[in-house]
Length: 370
Image (cartoon, rainbow, N blue to C red; front, side):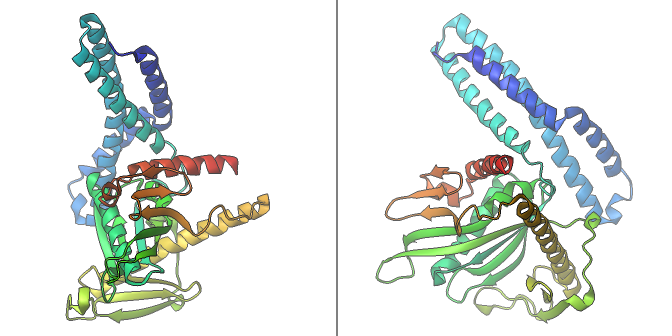
């Protein structure tokens, strides 16, 4: 039998799970599930598709949250049984299976514990993510497209619904910018730690001399607006432009001026939408994202006032928060948390949970010290 002290490990797992249950409150989750189930059973629910989707999505997410907690409790019980059997039979294969399950449970509990740290005002919201190419020319535009794929693949790995709202293609390759929604509760809480400047170092595929190129892309993450937020925007503060949607190389997506660009005159914030088929739908979607951005601006102003009153006006970090190095070695490293991974291909294929979890823990520690 392995030298692992399973008794101590199981005791630690149960202690952590108890702390998680104190925050997630299974009784509250059960009550919420009952309430949402009743709302979902209303015969005319789908007369309002947006409301219906909100109810069913919330029900699915809440049920999944309760199931995760209950499943972990059951797995810890099963692990205890596996330990007893392995000890009785002195079986090396059983011991290896027990060790593997212990590691798997510890990983899942760590991930669930991170979820309990998402207690910010907007953490439970869905997210709107915008990626913009920065310095670095065509490499930066290509990097922006790589990041878009990375986040969409991350969402796909978790079965999170996404919707690309707007894409602006660069002339030679890649993207000038792209905006998409992640339509699942706590998407904002998770992805908010991804906001910032990302840096890519590699041998440029666009340089015929094969020189190393450094390029940058910015990631913005905002919480999706809800009807209860009451962000009113006077019509005279918005400039509206309409244009035709287009794809790569200027290929026409439709033949009408259905795409919409809103400019908020007081702040200069610009939002473009071209995903929907009609101008009315694109304007509504653009207004919702504009409201979300103004909501975040309001929150940032409030936070800045609090920091000023506290006397803390220092910036915590420089421009870049994460580096993706493909040459002369391969590594992705977050400069805030020091979390790093050598498998760059996996990261660009959406394997970024480690970075997100480390970021959430880092942010919680930073807030606690503030």
